[in-house]
Length: 250
Image (tube, rainbow, N blue to C red; front, side, top):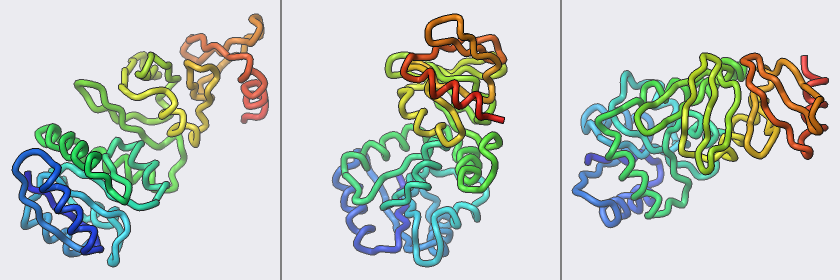
């Protein structure tokens, strides 16, 4: 693979290059750039398969660089030291990232995943979701990227009815009646969707509160009835919280 390292710190680029060549399987050609301007030039002339892109650089950010690209065809791996807001956006867009100081095992895993996806590139659409997350749009207008074994889905957050735990998997129920299985646990999506108002009503359910139609108190803890007709259990521990949220909304 042709791998481009874009980072403003020469010491970091040197360590990254050494780790790529020592740890990553296969034959690789590695090139470097130190910022937005030089990175854009290298992308044009080197035509990398994979780009490891720093978030914060001297002449701008990795996001500034990406905004200037038209239909990028490489696999992207962000590198960042501490930008938690950016990490949240990476998770929404399913774009890979590595936290500094970079672990060689994690780097190898990321490059291995990237090598398997080179022929099936969805980066342009994923970048649209990333930029949306970094903009001050309303939460219901924002999107999330989900991947199963065969497909990549680009969903509006408000098109999600609820999420259900299925062991280490999560099952998404959508307003159009479709369901999507994703190989990540419900806890990880609870952290992602909490800022959009999603609530954990039960150990197995994460619900979009805008889709709740009725709170039925016939059972001990109550049941939520969604606009779609789905019945969502409420745990005893969550009951008071759910009632308070529903009474205060609107």
